[in-house]
Length: 501
Image (cartoon, rainbow, N blue to C red; front, side, top):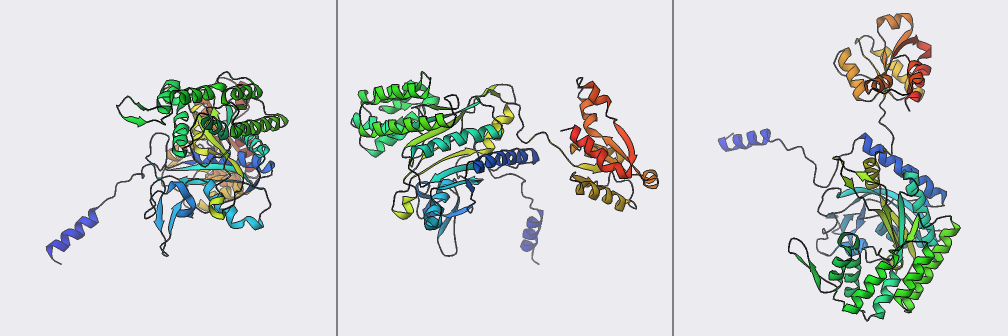
């Protein structure tokens, strides 16, 4: 081997990749996964109780099925993660769960019971710049009705979304579904002479920033444009003064709050008598009536004309779930989570495949975002961490006894493991405590000979270590360590596990 080859081989052998996450992709340990699974399980039970069936589509879709997120047809990787299959067709990881539903409905329409009511959950991927709380991979949960043009279908989705969020861990009053209808603003813009689709989109994007910029900032974006603190200029929608003030009056019509009928009356006073606007008012009136029938008051679902939703494919009712509960970050500073989900009516999405308009409406929320919000408020959606019962390993010769104990506990529905490291007794107890084990089982030679087991209550030890002063009677009734007959092992451990729940 020549010197150059030897050097190359040495460099290759010495290379050590840096252990790092790709940006925007998070590792999740048991606590995070437990919280997400709890939320998905609780919400799934609600959705199924309302008659929605589960559907899981694949992670990849053909790129042309994802539509507006793919501006570059030659290499469609802006906004999504895409690759070319061996037949030279572009595939992309799903950006959301709605576009795959539209494809599935178009592909299977003849065989589906209609309206088709489905819910779905799973990871979605977005090739966007990551940041605090903004990931390239995250879990979404959706529920949609495809095939019903009734406003009552929108109302049902809204009511079900409210019930799902409460099942996930929000107390009633800690979130509100804010509802609007795209036809109202469209009708208003038509009345003030705005017909251009690009200009209408500019208005939607300006109004969508109301929470962040306030009325004065939105006023600039509705007109010529706005320069931010850095000096960067954002071109405005180009409305004239009359149009700007009409839009601001419209989005401010919900500022007074009150019941939904009162907000509708204020909106009607602002938008005039355009045909499309009147249609939107009628749809919201029917949504209001259905929500009343479902027992959903304005504290859970309110009309708010400032809600427009950013996606272009919405065609009617739009809604957003806003968190109202107070939260703080790690430093104790107040945090506002704002929207955790949203949705609306999208009657044109399935038509991309079929050419025929198919009415549809749905709601989606971020599972990981909701879990993070609940945790910031001092709640753990999955409950406190609970590890397995740990069987201490004293000698190599007695390993069969240890495994027999662990198998017996598992057969009784109690998670258990045998310590398989090389450390001594003290380190094993520390390991069990770090695993948040409720108990440690000690089975030495004397216990084996006598047909007994020694059980240490680690839950009690942790409580005493925290200096908990309450529930004295409960603590005194629990021995920190006990020796029990081997036949009573399961019952004794079960008492400890259930007492610690």
